[in-house]
Length: 186
Ligand code: HEC
Ligand code: HEC
Image (spheres, rainbow, N blue to C red):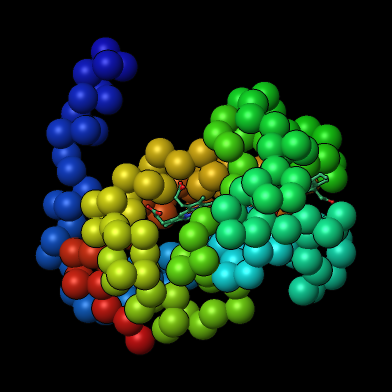
């Protein structure tokens, strides 16, 4: 029975939202930006090679301690790999101020996907353009948020960390509406 429900959900593609109006698309974008501008996302989505520790009690603008650098590799391969501390594990994150872990190799996104300090209009233009969004169309972006261990951790980080409002499913739905409306930006 549960299997049948999953199949039904898979059979109703999110792309069915292709009748969204521009106003609905802009409203959906505002919800998307409220998520992508949250520190759980912007602490990794940085242009520089220093991840951030915003929203962890160190004050605004706090960069990652211990002089951690991601370097060109974005995983610190040249200096100290992220995985030295951020181990790959699907165990729950329960210890406050411990390095968070997920079931994937901890790393920074490509610098082109930087969101830290950017306005809604800037991130909007960046995320709709495959030249600056890791070569993704809307279906790819929806697929990424539904399957990325980083995104699901961002919504449920545990260990007393704050999270953006909503769920992964909400974000996927807002992306489908925004895409269906032709990815409008303000
Ligand atoms: C630990 C670092 C990290 C955090 C935290 C993080 N991301 Fe990412 N993000 C990545 C990496 C790395 C990529 C590049 C694709 C990949 O390697 O998975 C990425 C890419 C993306 C993309 C582009 C899709 C693509 O195909 O590359 C989106 C959208 C995204 N992240 C959304 C989010 C959202 C929303 C949050 C917060 C809820 C978030 N990310 C938090 C590391 C992170
Ligand atoms: C020497 C150990 C160590 C290394 C190496 C390390 N980190 Fe961290 N990281 C930590 C600790 C500890 C925390 C938690 C800080 C806190 O909550 O007070 C953390 C937190 C973070 C956060 C904030 C997560 C949040 O809740 O928003 C990000 C982003 C991050 N690290 C990225 C990286 C990246 C990317 C690398 C590799 C380039 C890396 N770290 C390497 C120890 C490390």
